[in-house]
Length: 484
Ligand code: NAD
Image (tube, rainbow, N blue to C red; front, side):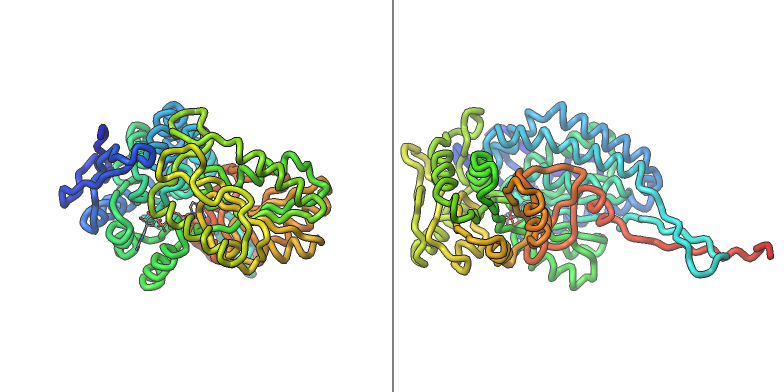
């Protein structure tokens, strides 16, 4: 154990009101590596009060250029400290240092892009029916926004909503997952260093049913942003409905890579392989289904198997490691359960189906490919959140679209084809919030991120993400001294 983290509330580092701490477990060593303050509803109340005070008693909401300056400073500090942030997050959730470095190469960009929105998004002046009315439509902040994040990508996920929320003049209380809270506290340190005023950026750590629930039910929170599982989303949406506050929901996915025969097969196969093995499949954008045109089905699968069987498993802190351990035992059991269901329902395991050979560690699972499956099977319908791929051949474009859309989810998808007419036709027929064409799992702070169907509602990131953190206020001025 080498680190102890307090919470960041009202510009100060504080222990929990209860004085309790919980352990953050390193999935590789399976030992506690940090102690984190275990907050409860009292700490949430303190943080929300501080956030309200900053909102109502300081000029924060009226200083977009000051906000932009602070967001840029934070972005620069994140860039400068990317290596430490990556190392901390990797210890917390077991993702490889290579993946974490790539993530933290991007996090600063979300805050930087948000800064540009703070400076440039203009009010509108719509022309109404009465020419003597001068009207202004302003985008005003909601107030205090409660942001809850999952363990798999805490830094990026927080930046995608916290950046636009702060840019728009809200104040925030962030509750990271108890499975991986430390990188968010490290970012709070940098926000403090950047000079964010007390109360603007707060982090309360602790467990979902206590801290998460308290954030949802606290009357001082004006809007919620939840990123996590559909199960968690239902609980949070119910709280939001009780309080009649808006909520942005970023939930799970069941993404399909749709590969046509005219695609660059080598690139498509590599993307399919990376799509379900990156982060050990513990990604909302995990490409857990591959729909492959029948004429190239065998060839693509052959290449995917070749790719995944060459992956290196091991210590996530080693830059040579391709795949680290699952985040915890519950995650591993979830994967085992779905693989067993896949077998029971008649799926054939082409590769994987258990721990990888030669790895002496209880939290590893080998990339597993199912063939002989149909779209109605459980493994094609439910989010596994592990390195499991269901491969299905298709004959026609219409079949590909039908199968791709045949889930309750709609977060992301990809189309692989050299025919851009077809690629566009298929892309716009897919029910997914993000569709990549001839690339996969690329993030960009300029683009909106979010889901359709049970993948959620509302958007984070980009201009859409900024609008999501604001509400319209219409000011209508009737001129009474109008010349004839
Ligand atoms: P989770 O739902 O278990 O937890 C998410 C957050 O909710 C955590 O902070 C947790 O503490 C909190 N929480 C848990 N129970 C709660 C309760 N009763 N009341 C209030 N809050 C509660 O999700 P997870 O396991 O951390 O993350 C994995 C899920 O997140 C997957 O489904 C994945 O697809 C999804 N995800 C979605 C996106 C996206 O952008 N759409 C991104 C990353 C992850």
